[in-house]
Image (cartoon, rainbow, N blue to C red; front, side, top):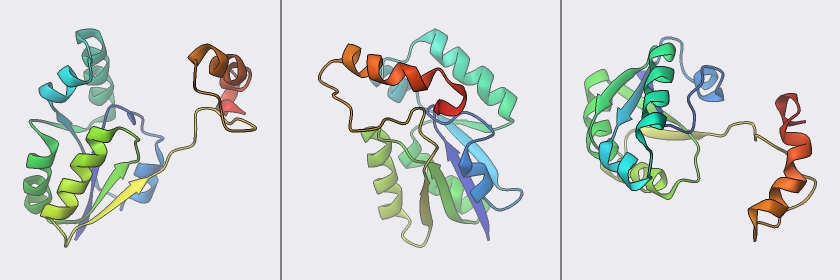
Length: 145
């Protein structure tokens, strides 16, 4: 059997750990979901950036709803494991749950990424300005360290 990598707009780089976890030759794909972009207020310029990045990554792009398309794509390629970059996005979390329910024989692994910034303690997220004042010192350094 084979691995399948499902990329989303929060993990568009070849150095993401999801690629290291996959079997050699694993197919990577992105599902272009117009409704998801609209719901997430992802504008035309951001969509263009996403598309250009995907073209550089040599990723297969499919159009439609991920929860509806992924089971068919998994079956078509004979994958027994789906690797997905972890995300706190509630829409992605819901879609992953739907895929797990639709295909219980397929292992769905969420792959964590290195955080953009590392803080000494839990941030005060009541106001972004206070958070940014604490985070910017390490965010602008190479590798967030």
